[in-house]
Length: 157
Image (cartoon, rainbow, N blue to C red):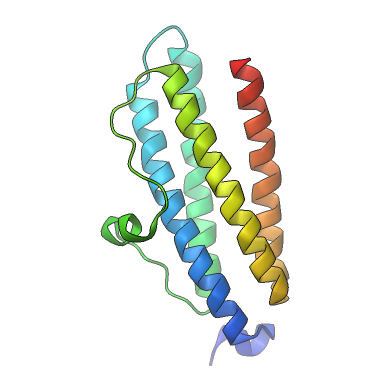
């Protein structure tokens, strides 16, 4: 018994979406870890504001990690659950120590840019397979992150 038997999604199309979601999951996991580091290590006049904002961002990212992993499962895949696998397939790199607000913002904006690009690709793949649930998830993520990017750019202006 398979979930796809009941959801009427094509297994071949679902496999392509699963593979793309696995990379997105890995990217989100590395992004999450980088955000934790930024939260812990930020210094300077913007400390209080950014410390709180980075916590908000990593909480949101943790929720997305869970949602993406569960979507992989719903499509019949198995999400990776270890960092050695994430590091192999992620397009993101571990950030290392960053305490500067400007450098932190650049890392975050670059990360959101890469996530949005990846999510647009997944949205297209899922659409080709009539996978409306994944399309909706990616659409929601993109909409939310575009607003976050706009706010971060305004904050830096």
